Amino acid sequence: MQDLFSNLIPALPEQETLAEGAVLLRGEALSHERDLLSALAQITARAAFRNMVTPGGFTMSVAMTNCGPLGWVSDRSGYRYSPVDPLTGENWPTMPECFLKLAQDAAAKAGYQNFTPDACLINRYEPKNKLSLHQDKDEKSPEHPIVSVSLGLPATFQFGGLKRTDPVLKYALQHGDVVVWGGPSRLYYHGITPLKDGEHPLLGRTRINLTFRKAA
Ligand code: MD3
Ligand code: FE
Image 1: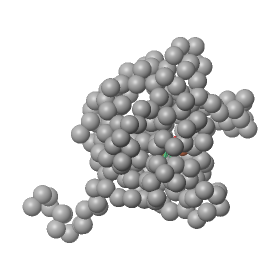
Image 2 (image 1 turned 60 degrees about the vertical axis):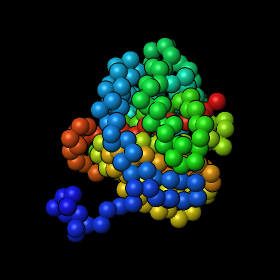
Image 3 (image 1 turned 30 degrees about the horizontal axis):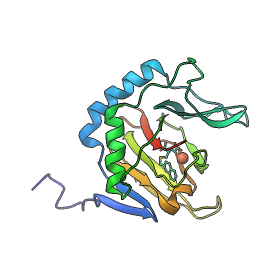
Image 4 (image 1 turned 120 degrees about the vertical axis):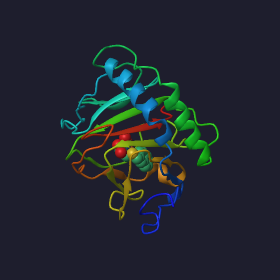
């Protein structure tokens, strides 16, 4: 027997389709967690997490940074991808090899053989932080999927449809889960409900989400 409970609690499937084109790969990032977290520390030493301001003038509760050739930025003038970190005036840190490999391997498992992300947005959630329902449509080529990687505290992910008013389903995203969002689901509304407090062995009271995108 693998552990004390495996005879009582059925295991969740390792791979699950959440919607047309959306594939959840449970625990896909677990074997790389140490490499991913040390690479993350190197990125944030050069491009610190910051709370960006929306075009409407609200400060986002989720703190963000980026790595790769392009990074997602928001300020009073709008949302866009930029090669330069506005805080430092320098290019965003290079996308680490272990980030790129994880994203490409996950995309391939979901059926996208030649995914070449040029942007990785890094979100940091602390207890009560949330991301309201939105669509990701700042990328020039939405025929490419987005690959998301969840690390640290678990979150409740909300997933609707093409219209903001479409009904939403909720999924738990756990440390190590990777989701590939392609096909019709690529433009579905989605968000994260307020983060529940807790303590993660590696990340403490924090959740980190990496999203790999083809922005240009
Ligand atoms: C479905 N991030 O950065 S990841 C985002 O957990 C974002 O930080 C959330 O939404 C987070 O834009 C959710 C899952 C995700 C990411 C992008 C998607 C789901 C998506 C794009 C299209 C459809
Ligand atoms: Fe999003």
